[in-house]
Amino acid sequence: MAGLGEFVVSHAAHSADLGDDAERGAVWALWSALFSDLVTSALVVALGGAVVAALASTELPTGRLAGGSDWARRAARSSGRPARLVRATLLIAAGSVLIFDPVLLGKIALVTAGVLVVLAGVSQLPAAAPRAEAARAPSAAASPLLLAGAMALAMAATALVLVLVLPAPGSATVESAGSAAGCNGSEALCVRRLDRVVFPGTHNSYAAADEPGWLFANQRHGIERQLRDGIRALTLDIHFGVSDPSTGRVRTDLAGEDSSRNKVAQQLSPGALRVADSLVGRVGTSGVNGERRAYLCHTLCELGAEPLDDQLRIIGSFLATHPGAVVITFIEPYVPVGTIERALTRVDLLSHAARLRLGEPLPTLGELKRADTRLVVLAEEDGGSRPWYLPGFSFVQDTPLGAKTPAQLRCTRYRGRPDSPMLLVNHWIPPFPPSVTRNEQIGGRFLERRLRQCERRRRMLPNLIAVDFYERSGVVEAARRLNPAQG
Image (cartoon, rainbow, N blue to C red; front, side):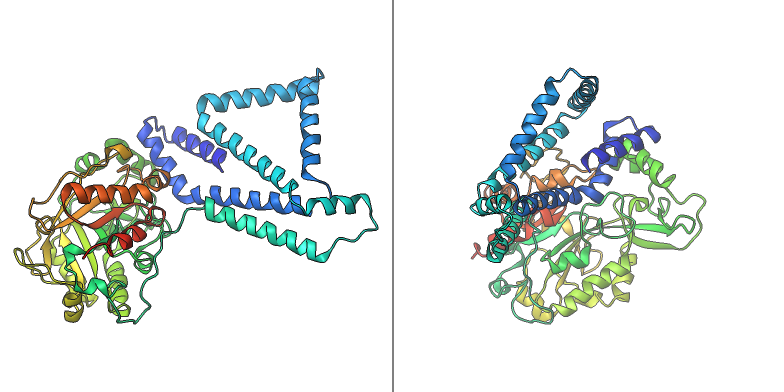
């Protein structure tokens, strides 16, 4: 899978004449989002198969390994023409990979060495000796109990590898549908104000790899699954788009948003816009006629779009079946507030949006629950134009954007006022294209250390945590551990 990915990305970059590293990175991110999990799964299956094969063998694995090493030595020293051709081919291939992708060669070497070590370990199991004796004495029957024990051992070993190798899903146990107990799954949270609660969240929540049409997704699962897994803060970008019947994709209505291709290039970079043009055709609604509608998109609806009404219905359905849940949405709007208001009205969510007042103490989760206003709508722009459409950076201050390495993640204030009562921690790298591997590396303990660090430096509880690929980051568990620590 790794070798095929390198080939596909190189071929795609050559065919589309993509010479910039960022453009090639965008194509690689697309491949990674689709197939990266298969690499780990294939390795786990291969290791499990090796263990089962060794246990089922009538010959000791050590004997096979010894025989294989003798054959390898003879092949390496042979002066025959076939052996020399094979050696030349292998050396040229290894040298090429070492030049162009030394990390890939290192991974192959480590995986091969790991399988050999596992087989050597299997050969030391007590069950191996009786099996070898049975091979030398055909009349001796293998004990059914021994075979069962060997298979159980193989299954246990494979399960252990699954636990150690595969990333934890990061899902939390949430309150059962219809349960009215607690607030966000905990009785203790009901008496706490919004600024004393941690809400695990997702960046570009709607951009999910398992939803149709997304080319550069920031999440693996969509909003419905995120809410079930314990996510309670969603970041949403709302754009105007028009469905293109010739391609089935949504075209960004740049004119309707008072935007242009130049503005898009400033947001994504010229290279990213060029990649989008290469993949889906020229960005924009030129030549496309249709009804303008509101969609959840990240800058360009051509790269993926979800109808706003559909996603709001998902949130409303979750709140209806989870009476103790409080959900915060942070909106980056490219449409008028009236468009959002009409959408909330159509899905019967407007009456459930909280009305908060600046300068007053924030409500507790229990108060929002009793009033059945368990949807908090924050907005980057035009906030305050409606009682429920809250000025986001008057209520929230956040940490800087744009980190490209873990070392560039900072806790300093980026937006919001010094007296804004809630803290949003932006925790993802890089901005474009999203990378599963790089964001997984800043999850788990790294994420918790940063949250504690920001809490100390800002003297504020990290109330909202926005991450990419939430199931790899452990953000739900991190929030759960931070919440009980607060009084």
